[in-house]
Image 1 (tube, rainbow, N blue to C red):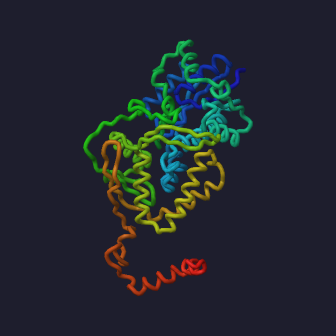
Image 2 (image 1 turned 90 degrees about the vertical axis):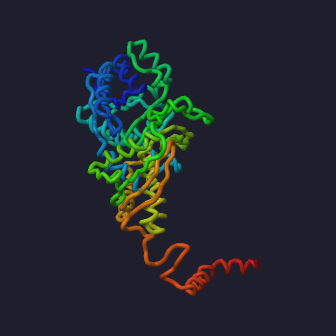
Image 3 (image 1 turned 180 degrees about the horizontal axis):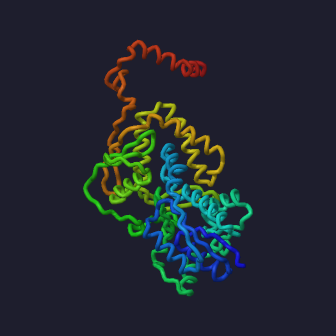
Length: 396
């Protein structure tokens, strides 16, 4: 009997090559699985299924993991205001783990002999898939043709053409990964340090002019409304913000960072929804959290994002950090106002019943109500005692 392999399949160039190669050249019974984190609609999923069958898959399934991805990852990334190197909302980094989890569950259900993915040997995804597969299913073989054969995109395109597979190969010059939490774009200009992506490389072109007001509602740190409309489904609320923001081409950038494998990496991305939501959430926290809540939450959020990026989701300390991040969100409730313009946006202000500016203690720079001038003089003398001691001993 043929060995059964489950291939993590997105329909892109690398996984398209793997599906045909494993079936035609290696004789595997290939089962393709699209772990959809929210980046594909029904029509796109059906098109990917048709593509998989043409490439030689005996069966294709779509694993809808959008809600799991939100509950177990996205909301904590919002709680932690996670932006890799202050820039990238780790869109691909975070979703890969949950795709790997879904693929392993499916592989076990059908009693597969092996699992496969199309990652190259020069990126982070190979570690994310391999580590998750190995921890949760050490008995299964892991097959990675693109990595092991050191294939170029040109070779893969040529192979598919030679065997009669027709696709938009010009589009495949870029590796585009679309999910609920943003879209990454890699290839060509991202492979060097001195060029940027052309306008045509971004999936969402600028389609608006002038300006537009946007209001985002949060309840205990989670998005719950957009422009006054309440959403029971958090993913639907995220999609709504993305749809509004992408018209203005906001949330685009180039991320440069340190990879898991020790080299520098560069990727373009568009993430209107994530960046609008994270920065709106951050502004609301500035009004509703204490100084030390913000300080320690910033440290934890940075570590959480780093561990998530570096394939450490299964490390138990992640659950500890999630518990802390969620604890900080009890009063992060209110509405944030933004103004959108072509390629950029402005955070206008907030409304919240927990706004710490609305206190009876004073108005910054204008009026104090809870202390006297003498109180401040005494406080300042005590605050400066250690520095005065230091400088007096030095004789300065």
